[in-house]
Length: 239
Image (cartoon, rainbow, N blue to C red; front, top):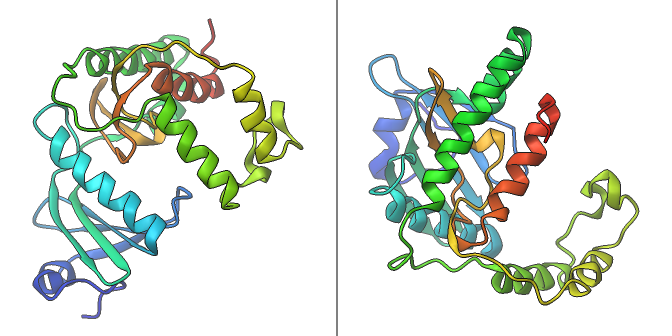
């Protein structure tokens, strides 16, 4: 059976025996497939091409390995780089995304929504309390701002995707607005980096793990809080 993606020879037999389903959510530029098996756990395969995306997937692989002994993340089954392409194979997490959980909770009322939001908060609090002394990943404000400037200069920022408050802004306007706030004080904690409802999995009211950890590392806690709070706002969670 021919697989939808080009995979290493060592993976061919394993991948071919599974049902491939294309995952179209997200805007990372990666090709992502869920691989389902009737006899074992499901898995996910992510493949990217190009220097920018290959570097991002390499960063995700490194963080998955480092985080494996600290928090629940997908287990890495394989990773390979070949030429301009990188491919990551991981075991699926149990449960479903926090977004799907909250969509169902809406029908049950405010208490169900609050319970899921509390579970997210408890998990995030535990992550932010992890020791930092051996974390090799610095993704603090200075690093983020430098990367943001690079992406703006390279024309990689999608200005159409800005939120309503910044509709019509140019990418350079955002940089100028940030510059006007400098210097900014910040705390140092272990962060997920993209703690959105789609990247958190929940089962029986508990967080079972997180996805897309390519930006995880030491940063200000508001890196996670701001993204999570924005997403929770879609479900009526407010101060």
